[in-house]
Length: 215
Image (cartoon, rainbow, N blue to C red; front, side):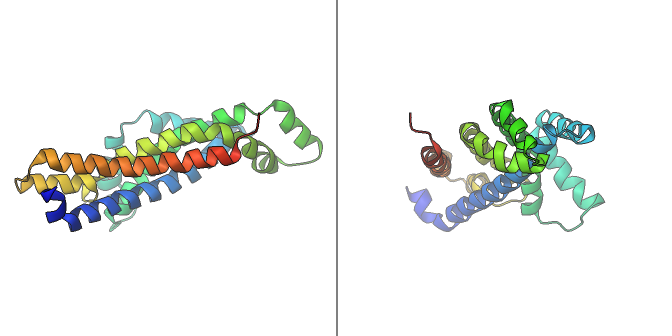
């Protein structure tokens, strides 16, 4: 308990850093995941090929390698001076978007084909059909896997601590270097992660209840 009270500002800063990184990366991953899922089911072959390449490349690349590319290639070649927070958000968001894409695509596949055919028969475009007919019906199916993906993203954010980001595991390294009891440090950090992941689970359970169909 003394470790938590003595270093409460550091723990609070690390907790807020993990929450900020998780929130920003989740927003980026969901936006990109929806866009790439649209590409994956698009009738345009180049878009389908791009979506397939995106998922195949990012889903099969180790996250640590993406962090190395983001921190040592992007600032040198594309955007010098980019902050560590933005680079970590890009690495986490791009990596997780491939999993979000596949969850959304699996949800789209659960919607009966007749729904899309009926929408096209009344003159709706592919984008209108996807946005107004298919995605609203697929949402209920997508929520449970999306919850698991965002919980995994929260835990993956620990890698950002090794790349100059202030988050929970960077606090553990700081206190461990000062010779503080590592057992208590890990206990408080584990509890902090539980708070974040329980909040994500609770939010998605609430959404599932609001969208569930009475049987």
